[in-house]
Length: 386
Length: 225
Image (tube, rainbow over all chains, first blue to last red; front, side, top):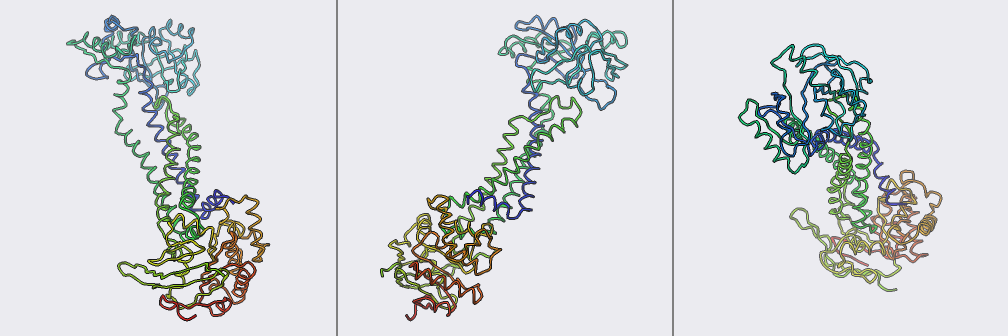
């Protein structure tokens, strides 16, 4: 007869109670895993930002455009390697619910400044050649079953009208946290039409993407770029891509903070549930623990029995929860619109945190019953009527 | 026979809120090795308290308790636990078996604190369960046994480590007449055949008759001989 066997038998004394507690921990760990995944995915968009890329945008607000003419001026700044640019196009593909990023970009340079977007050289060459060509992220191509040569029609909103693009390339992500849910097409194609239909909007660029040689000089180069356009009608604000991404995340920081807190509240609540289970179990066994003490079992043994039972329940619940979190997150990823989260997967740190939380729950839930059991004198234990 | 138990000028009080309740006052008692002594007395006379002090599960307010050449009243909790495991077997009125363990596993419990191998433990357990007449019930759980059988398992658990002293607190208090007689016969046998020193608390004069010596307690004092 082993102590582990006794721990197992103790845990299974009240099967329904134990099963319900395990189910509670499982659900809590799944909720924790899901919330943490959202939080980490949100944060990882910042982490995924390149250190040697700067973003130059309108100083007043990101929504105001910059003149196309800035490109050459920015390029002249010492330390700047390549300058590209992009414009948020918006539009609707088939249905308003089909959300993903659609960008008018500088076809000549965009893949130079975004090396994490992997595209076959021949596809890139064709894309650059054809004015109405577009390139899709692999994730979007897969979701809508779009192949090279297909025509994608967008219904414009920011840029009204019907827009037809021929898919000439599919880019793949270099890393797990690279966004492969974008549609990229020629800015010149959009601009030419603007010159005809809405000349006042022609020559507008959303933001510049500036590749620099030395990330350590990011601050100096940013200052130099912004100095070029001081006192102009469109002053600029240049910052690292990371700072730019943080600006977006900061806009949702209250929600993220709430989700973060909620994930830990869930762990706290389930900790109380398990603690309650363990307190009830220890209380019911007060006489038995007195017997163990009488037989010569030490503080170490009794601590091991109670802690072992608590850990068994918490780790079982945590393990099942973690095992279920993976398919649930995968299902969640399928259910949410593409592009809402460019990528959605469980970071290893989330799994480690969930496991750590399960272990912590087991330990903390056992503290009070252990303390009570050790404090109770043998004679008091025998007199106890539960 | 040498003295196995020496209780010298022992007093014991309990505190309920701010009230001190004296239970034993300046009590002395000697028990020889191999003795079978019954402690009788009305409720509240201090029988169980005295038994607990001798068995090392409670400590006196004053005085000395020496058992098997060890002054247990001076031992710390950890040393006392070890001492109990090596020297004392316990039999309780309500058996106090662990309900999720079989008869075999209940009896094996004290042996888990020894260095015996699994095979040796098995041999010891089967031997004592044979002695108490439950060799065919080793895989039974307590709820599958009668009261008398449960108490016999408890006795087997008490003697499996071969302790020098066996303490029994109302061992027949929860049993019918026939089962009680069987348990008392078993205790007698352990005393006579295996030379176990037995200290038994009982209300039952029939049970006390089986002991070689009967001592009476009244209001915390030993009376008569």
